[in-house]
Amino acid sequence: MIKYILIICLFFIGCVTDRSFNTSNICDIFKTNPKWKSFTEDTKEKWGVPVSLQLSFMKQESSFSRTARPPRKKVLGFIPGLRASSAYGYSQALDGTWKEYKQSTGNLDADRKDFKDASDFIGWYVDGSYRLLKLSKNDVYNHYLAYHEGRGGFQKKSYNKKKWLLDVAKKVERQAKEYSNQIQKCNFHKNSVF
Image 1 (cartoon, rainbow, N blue to C red):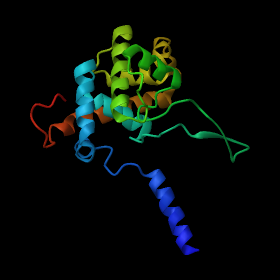
Image 2 (tube, rainbow, N blue to C red):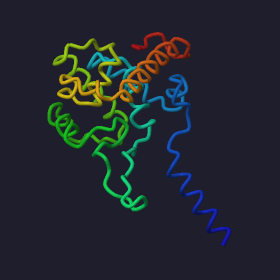
Image 3 (tube, rainbow, N blue to C red):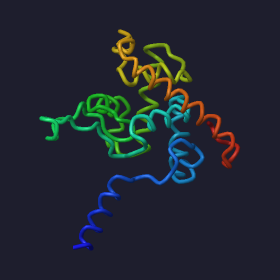
């Protein structure tokens, strides 16, 4: 009996923990996941979107969990109901926006659970917001608001009715600044494009 309980506990621990790094430290993130560094650098080269912005969005949206989803709403306080949205993966991209990304970029095999695709998606989305909304690609705060509310919502300033979201955007902006400062102290090659 104890053996079965132990197996069940280990199973749940394995499901909950899919990362073993400090999500607030860019050096630790890239030391643990070296390919992520090149993927985010590729996105910066392609879309002009800072690595620190990409990672701060992913940290906020999914805590770097490839299978992250919004929690289910509870029916009668305990029965799992529908999810608040179709957001999924590292970038928490919605079904419709992900479909638009795949069609727009020709990356038809893109997967929201794939870090490389999630990084590219964020680059694509921020580039689109830069073009439409005329936001500097270094403006993490406003890009996060546009990312969360959608570009139409941003244009309507829907975020002004959500103090909690303004606070989250400030938090994401602070995290991006921390990542930018930390990368200078990492022991990576000097040709990095951060």
